[in-house]
Length: 60
Image: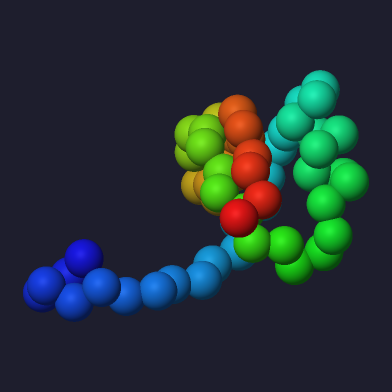
């Protein structure tokens, strides 16, 4: 919330998921609304690009 105004945002991030989480994502329809928990980290030590490492994903 900025200046007491709730705003909806959209963005695109590269993501990394492994194991069952990756399988769940692969089975979801494209453009699904989801809630993701995980962490951001650089793509590599030499890169400033961020990647979202997915710990869990739930369709909402």
